[in-house]
Amino acid sequence: MNNWDNFELAQKKEYALAIAKSSDRIANLLNNLLDFANICRNDFNLNLEPLNLYKIFKIKSQVNNNIQFTANFDEDLIFFSDKYLISKLLDNLIISITNFTKIYIEARIQEATNCVILTLK
Image (cartoon, rainbow, N blue to C red; front, side):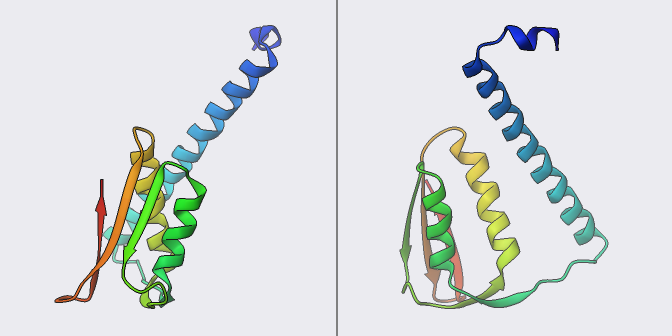
């Protein structure tokens, strides 16, 4: 820590940002491990609620400029899902993929199963 005083302000900001990003990744990893442990113990409940997935995807894509999102379904369509898990899934995908490149997310409904299919490019 004695060298900290020798760094320029820009270097200090860069290192602080790197530490903050690493802290976020570690917190995310720990939360994933806790969720996985709960699933393994059969101690995991889905909190299904009506959600507008289009709005959730749009919000996530507006936070990160490397994401382009399109939905091949009605913007007002309501799905029943767990908001926490959907958000977490998207966050994990975004964190994993946008570190390397831009991402294109397409969401569509598979009519035979009434499932939402995500295509990542």
